[in-house]
Image (cartoon, rainbow, N blue to C red):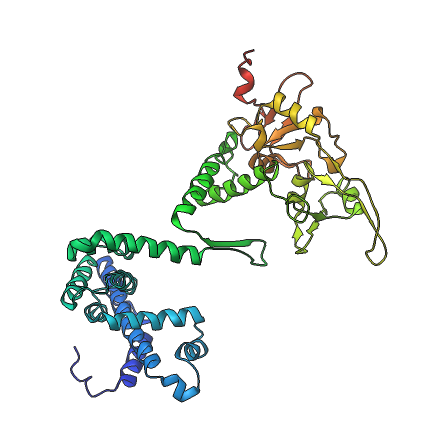
Length: 448
């Protein structure tokens, strides 16, 4: 297939590839059958891998020969970042991939032939880099052939797991000592690389990114997963309007519930003379207006980041919070600071725990210590902080029943009879009869 192309230089060949891609992107239908289209996609992926291997080799050669330094007075990675709008990390990754392929010629040739995909060749070279430095060259070549063979049946993730197995096959006499040294080296590297960052995306979310050594992360993973299991839906699973909860969403909710529970205990660490807490500012006029007006215009801002908080979240927080009245002067000077008071006292929470014995939402088994004290008639709407107006709800179901300002809204509601346990009234879309439901724990008398 290369006849007639040998006389072209590399630049002309790359231009030819570009022209071929231009022809591929038109609307002509060349392959009408499903089998042909699938075969075309498989071959296109293979060709892309071959081109990537060549690109990586070219980038590594430019870096090795200081081409960018001579032409522009800068490194190859800096030039690549500017010329192709790569990030610096992407440029380093491309050059590093080419450098690793150069160290292992058999893997490089397989990648350029399309027998090994880029992610596979990256995994293979990472495994080969872990081999004992004193292995004979013939053994290293054998290892390359073996790994290229494995690539026909293994994904990149599976290939990365073959390090210890490879040493066992090639040099069994040093396998145990090598594995111990590898584990120590990986632990030291993972310890140095541990991190946790919180980055606002300025679109309503905080991006959480981190890394922990495996042994330390294991307890974190198991704890969050355990809390995530507690976030499964109860009676509200019948609601056709309820959003689908994926496992990843439940883990996120589990982490939030874990931190929420910790913040309510004496184990919560003190920082700056106080336990960690979320502080929101809202004007008195807004609070008074929120109790009267519909639709709601209540909103607040987080102290520190000045991030605005939506009305629904703020109403939920107002059910169980501490209020610190502050009178501000014309230039925001603090003129008078009122006495802090907790809306739900310790005695009231104890009474709620005895009466409700956990989240009152049918089917939910969250214990009292994991629940919020929910005002049935909201505090912002004049509701009293009294047992007759309070029930325990887990964070998830608190959000489900928290009322809006629309009296006609088809929503979940809580009713607390004068004598008897709390009742949950489903929306009409779940039960057109509106039949109240009770948690099954209230149907079985407590044994004394």
